[in-house]
Image (cartoon, rainbow, N blue to C red):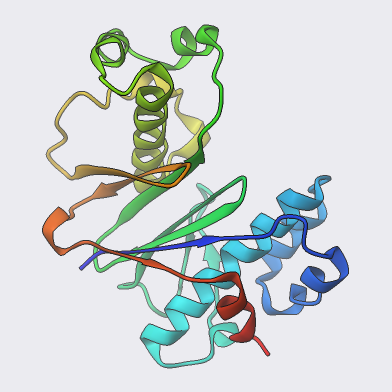
Length: 215
């Protein structure tokens, strides 16, 4: 079964308060956060791993901070001692998302925003451009659906930024998995993997509940 956990977060939360959760994070995440200049980016990054540790800890019936988090050569995170527990992380302005499954999975979430048309030519295939023009919801909504699918697929493969987005055509069928795309308020998110839409569940988790898990 695939589960999606989404949390809306306060990116303007007092930085001293949010950094008090720094010790609960992996050393890999801590090093990345220290390189971030934006306070909101640091908050999103911290909350992403805390959400992962909460949902994984609840499932594995251990404290979230006790879980060892590793990183593959590609940069894809994983649990070395729980290899059968697959997950994918994503965050955007005002929200963080964790998708978990018993199969490899990729996920991405994006906040609704204006996208310059020049970007379309750089990242979309010809067939994706055609599909976007036919989309009833308009170009912005269509682009975010396509973009999150590309990101989800690349996270599933573990290739991430090593592959140019225009090399991935989300209008095609892939024998190794399916795309699932949905929206919540002003967010669009996509999942890729060997998943069944009928079995997929989404759960909202409050920022308060996440933070209380580490106190």
